[in-house]
Figure (tube, rainbow, N blue to C red):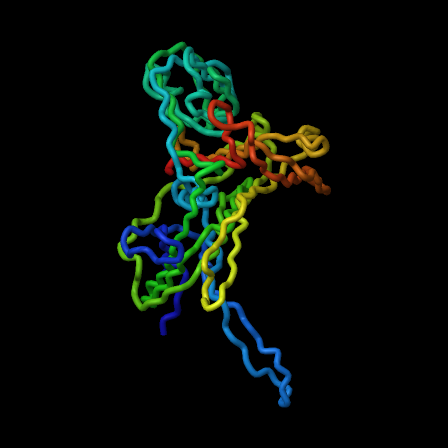
Length: 403
């Protein structure tokens, strides 16, 4: 007798053209995971009749739906489709900024990158994003290195190398190019997408397939511990299941091979300043979705999307009053984190930026140890951002070097 095991289960997915309609079997994507608990659920209706035999007479199955969670270890490119679905905007590239004259100044850990003409703001550069210098006759120490943007004006970027290795002061150097690596997305103000996916659990040891259709991202959870791998969890709502005795999504694209992100290879900043005493960060992107049953149908007619709500919490060692007073004084601040796959100068990375947050508590623990403060926060719509400014007009912005 063969008993199914998790390592023999394949998880595959493909975007749907119409909600709840399983797409064609070709061109699906094999997905890395820690676990997937997608399953068919049914409402349960119990008879309330009072009968002479004193016993329950009937129970019926009701509305069918799919729910469950897919968890994984966060890596660039792997979960990009679901991040874009959660914020309801497709990934887009920012055009590389070429033929600029660059001057690099500073002695670390932060540096300024100054252009002689043009505007970083007009060219779409934002605080919290990460870019690389190339071309020109720049010193080799300044080329192809992940530079995290802490703040900016029209002509000056204040940056920090993600790998902590120093830049070399020089310039002006003409003919340089600055590129925001990969693509970016954020919760938009208009033109929201409404994506759904079909996921397949294919049990290779049993040759059994379960395809879950109409799945939308109800909530995306990101966890960034001070030690260990960065994590991702996707809470899904879906329509129905299709079962078969053979694989449905045949010849899927192979799993991504990018490295796993870890907070030890990354940086966090609050209000434009790098913070070294943060011990953890978690946040969630919530879709506030709902589904209502209709008469004469045993599945939902649709899953309605609600607001995009982002909240989270970070912890930090208690070293001064700065962050505590953000709570006491109800001060709105920005928060951003950049995570890398290694200490290599041009390794893959993912960034998350919250242009406007409000800290809602500042509790401290106690004991024979370093005291830790906990800062829950709500991310808010940033009406001051947008084109020509240093931030997106959004609650959250994401950059992925492999998107």
